[in-house]
Image (cartoon, rainbow over all chains, first blue to last red; front, side, top):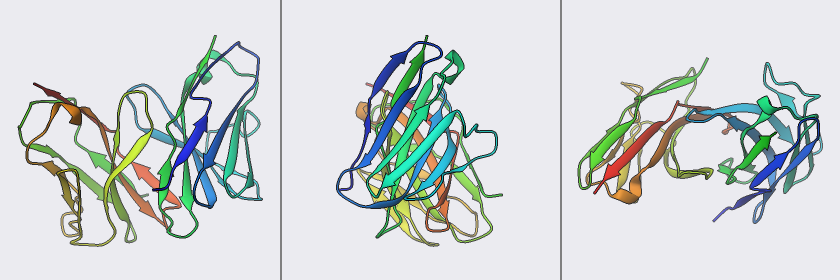
Amino acid sequence: GAVVSQHPSRVICKSGTSVKIECRSLDFQATTMFWYRQFPKQSLMLMATSNEGSKATYEQGVEKDKFLINHASLTLSTLTVTSAHPEDSSFYICSARAAATYEQYFGPGTRLTVT
Amino acid sequence: GDSVTQMEGPVTLSEEAFLTINCTYTATGYPSLFWYVQYPGEGLQLLLKATKADDKGSNKGFEATYRKETTSFHLEKGSVQVSDSAVYFCALGTYNNNDMRFGAGTRLTVKP
């Protein structure tokens, strides 16, 4: 079946540093990838939609200069949290929409802790 | 806009009990409907889906029927197991799943 990986699964960084999270579709091509944020015991909040080869579309209230998204290939999207602060600590989940079926497949998530 | 409302939890059941988690939706078009399950510390796994009215999705003993007349997609399982303990999310997808909306999630705990 379709598999989406995320790396790293957990990361701890110091306030002010930047962190990059990778999302890969392992066995299918994804023209569109999505980045979600999940707070403890809450639902997923869509942050942005990225299409391969073009700029990401950010949801209202999401700072595009803080959360940089790059979707350079049909199997890889990256989210970079720049100048991270403790309030950026969260669980970040990506999903990839298969080009052939439009089904969204979710990655296992990345837990970011900013100290 | 499109939205999903699902039954608030937490839900605690004994093993082999019957499970129902209610989910209703609001959509202007004809969405696909999904149930996802999230185990602690993990991402979402698709549990089942239905793409049109009257479709029934089923997997691992779970079932849900797409009811257009009641705009519902309730999740049911006849006999839950301890291993079913997780958070369940109802979701809808429109525009070829380019726009997905999730419910708030329902935490299920099954006790032996």
